[in-house]
Length: 323
Image (tube, rainbow, N blue to C red; front, side, top):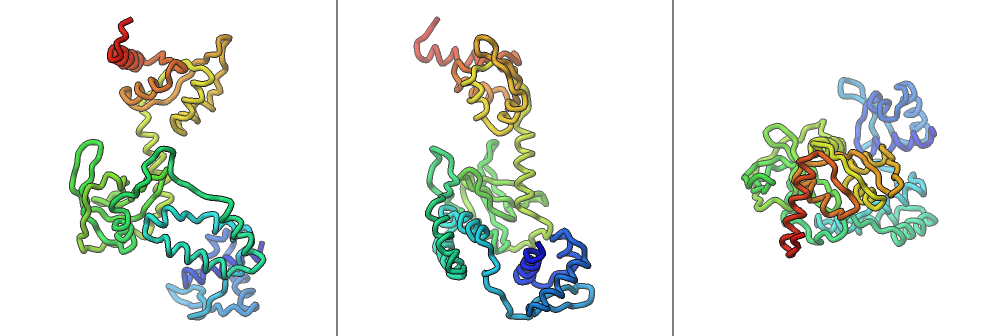
């Protein structure tokens, strides 16, 4: 445990530079006294770490000193190769760089781990795209990525579900979810999410901005997706479903799946069960239920059942069915 902690301290100092004892203690979840003992242990092992006093003081490594990657464990090395996503890297214009970085990492590993790393790359492939999704990348992906990296404002023409508007945004980060690229950006002091495929035009402004020091992209995205689900499900539908219908309901979204699993409905003698599930607005929900065929029947609310009946009646008339 201590050896792992010493290696973590070493990597933090090597990648972040001068770091206070308090910051190290908080990240490692140990006391400040333990950090001081660990620093003494590193010094005794020949690591050139020194302390700087003062308001902005802390521990740092001697300039120019670096350790090799032989501190990696075999599972950690496998995890690094497993995390590689050549598709997204290529879309960002970094495919060649990603391949070169993998080669350098491979060369830095101990010889007996290289075969393990190659085995991981050859036996696992990550494809982030959903089925039947288009394989093209967004037109402005590389330009947005460059703006994220250089902290440069960009002017975009964006098509939302309401209208098309020109906006100037401060891009903070890119997210790939289900094969779809999004950019998280600041506008008017608030963080917002934009789908790259809905950007119709993009131009540089030549203006830089200061990225908020406390902005954390993974945390923002996790909370934003939760908030989106909370906002989009505005009602409850009372339905009856067969076993096949329950499977179709679970496939609607994670929110509906969790609701179905929490209820654990029991089928009656005819194989049907009744349950309540969260739904989006009535128009959208009616289309979703129609796609489930006769495995799911909407019992309520009345406006949703009526909308389903109306849509089915229109389809029947379209196909010449009158009774």
